[in-house]
Image (cartoon, one colour):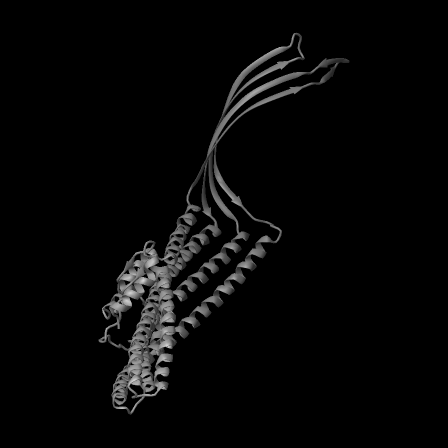
Length: 459
């Protein structure tokens, strides 16, 4: 249905935006590749998946040796004043002390048993698997979003082109009506009917232009560029029934491979591990601990007890080594542990219900998409025949108008019917492609290869 006039009109609509976003001619596969590079939502999903992958090394690190070093330096000043009684006499007991201390230590600890840490490693693995499933689900969702925006653009372009053709044809019909009226072949009412139809067609073109512009903007929001001349399905596009040819078989595949279901399963596994982690708050932990420390100190002292006062100074060096086992046994935490266990149990129950909901949703979407594809095939075939019949009816009406058996209104109605039949036929083919992709998405088998296959049906 594409023609040069439509391309010029759409180019004019987008002319004010080309400085910010380039205009490209592309098929569905080209558009998908641009979306993979430029879509913000898939970029967010990829970053979240990469962030989740760091949970594994963080969890493993808690079971690896922990080494810590400490260095301290300080000065101490102290004075004392007092009296001592001895043999009935009073002696002064005053002194001043000043010391400088430097110390350092290195300690190593290795977990021998900590049930919470063991479960955290398993919980991290479940979280990474869940994030991976969600990322792949986002990739499949991107395919469907791109296809929906792409075929919506095609549909609005079809409507716009049909509106332009309709307006142009009605304009010619209006001109013919005026000439026939001038020579007395028709009544003025035929001219007025043609004029009213022309005005209505003008309004329809304006509305179709706005719809096409909005569809182009929606696609640009995904891929970052405008598409000027999108490829459309050819007349030889095959109508392939789903294989296997059983809704139950597709449902079985969906329950096993649907990515939202898989993500929910791993979310439940993660919640179960969290419950075990919280219960481990009641369990003892055992660690191997090794420590080496050294300290150096200098001191100055002045003793006022003696006459004259006596002064002294010196230094001292100490070192120590320790190695042993450290057992920690939780006794009472004010009820916090029990409360956290109950909280985790409720969250686990919610995750189990979320899994059940995901499975039901996957089954419903799979059955609906399967039946939609079957229905689309029959609908495309029926609408193709309807379009051919509308073409035949238009030719017959035009011939009747030429010989005076049909009116201009009849011709206008027949032309509208033909154009609407064409739009319906094209739209049904777009729906067939979209429902095919949605069926594979629901089953969890949608890949970029499916996009490439659809692109071979287009030009």
